[in-house]
Length: 375
Image (cartoon, rainbow, N blue to C red; front, side, top):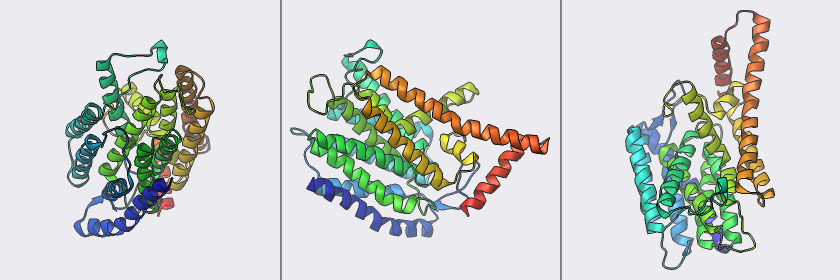
């Protein structure tokens, strides 16, 4: 426990002391995230927070980290994280093409999976499947890591959202790793949690800095690794007190906000016959902004939703993986309809009052109201 506290405080303090200097440098060099049609902020904001996040995490782990297994030093994970960090940092400074970003994510995932042996080697009864071939384990694990990594990049659209959700997920994984005496992995998770909490001091609305791709990609990547290890530690041969037979379902519940939002947005884009990789304003945080919520309200609301999903999942952890996914997925789908219903209801009221008011005018009015709230 002493190492957990020390690693948490170390990463937090490194980030807190590093960010003011990073903000100063970003302003001097003009390294801003500039507003555009799909972004919610209306002023230029530095986007190099990922530097502080990764440095804080790395220093804390280097000082207080413990071995995570016999002869295991996680050198492959470190190498993968460095690759992702510089890929994201380049994109924050000089735009990087989507294919190059995907290539670096694929490389990082392959290095980690192949070098560290971090694998999803069972479906835990999902669709009636348990054990899967080794080659399929590699494919599924790499795909899972890439999906989770990008999902955190996609939800980074509201002040404090990605950082807060990442903090909740990291703490959840860290506590469970500690319960099963995997202190090395617990320290990794608490290091990330401390760094994210320190970052939130400057990123919660009104944000003074963004984490950028360097921060969101590395955060998503680490959480993806924690999720895979969470599933792997709950293998059939594990019989500890905290064994979870439906580990994949619980992992999805922990990461429900970024995973569900990514799936939802991709499906909507396909339905509209658009490329699923073209950015738009259909994310859940955009929907909440449209109904009049501010950045703080959106972030806090989604924090609470994430905590509720984690709590529900652990309460029903003895259910099958399939049942947990059905419950979690169904509840997420139902909750996602609330802001859509509220927006349509407000629109209908305005049309009834104003006759010929059209949706575009309403949206523009809502955007103007939102900008006033932010200012």
